[in-house]
Length: 444
Image (cartoon, rainbow, N blue to C red):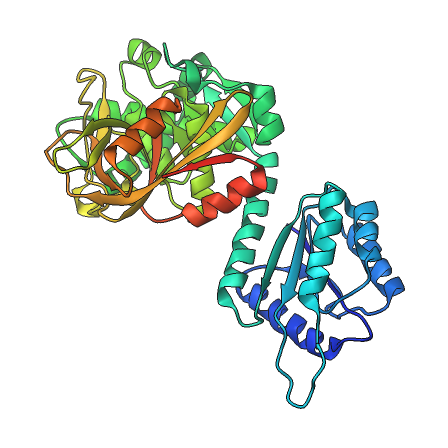
């Protein structure tokens, strides 16, 4: 992502101090992994400002930052609108420095931010502002999060999801309005039939399957004699990985039942688990909005998550989340405890994962499509010791909100029954992303 930085000033103010602020602010953003395009000088002549705007336009920057080093020319906004109306715009100002022996107003930066924001509002141009002291680390962190949210938005516009086999029977909300999804989220959806997948599985080489089986055994203990099922699991993983590369796919929504059980006599939980473990996001049961939620959190955390159902309110005040064995081993509480077993609900049909999940802070999230718009549910809390022994994967969560608030929000607002559980606090990053994407947030 190219981020344009235009620092503006005015001859009557202390643009030398504005230059010091610019130099410091560039270094602080670079240290946070943000690269900037700009002349790195505070421009105080209107013609030079206009020339720089045109130069940044020719660089095809994706986001424009106007740093109000001092008060500056009102015409700057007209020029920005004329040249870069479609670009996201940030206004950035600084508090006034104390200069010994100087009794004037050094910068008048806040006034510039105020003036420009009033122009932009009337020109119906969305913008974001940041204002604070030059050494305010929180301000830089907020700017970084906001820019990363824009980077994710741009990434989504070039993202391709693949639905393997469609949705499972009766899960009507696993599908989306594809044109709305493309318009609002930016992601293209393509399809890969189960017939094609099974055909590709049969073409996988023995060597590739053997390597994948070794990978499975390297990260999990195999309970019982599951060789046939491990080969089928490895064959499907290999076929999907190959399809991903050949078709430039970024994530998959897999119809994991009933067809796979009927035709191949196997379950797909191990497939989902190990693909997610390799940072290839795969949602269960053909659920596209869950895949989107998984993908977004993975871009923020660089880790997979636990996709689960909410199944019980426990006596200790926690909610139990559970799924039948698709959790990725990378997020196991104890890596030595990761097991691959016979599937708990499809006992004659192959394998599933079984292990405990982290005891930590959690963020539980789900993007949902409703009334031609998208919204995101964000719930915070902590995972706690499970109240009972269960097969497959479970995580008991003590939410910050009460039981009634949690249930009323989920049920009365009609959120679907799959939730992405992230074992860290990413609420701030999610809120920034939703702000950039104009997605409604429901936070509890």
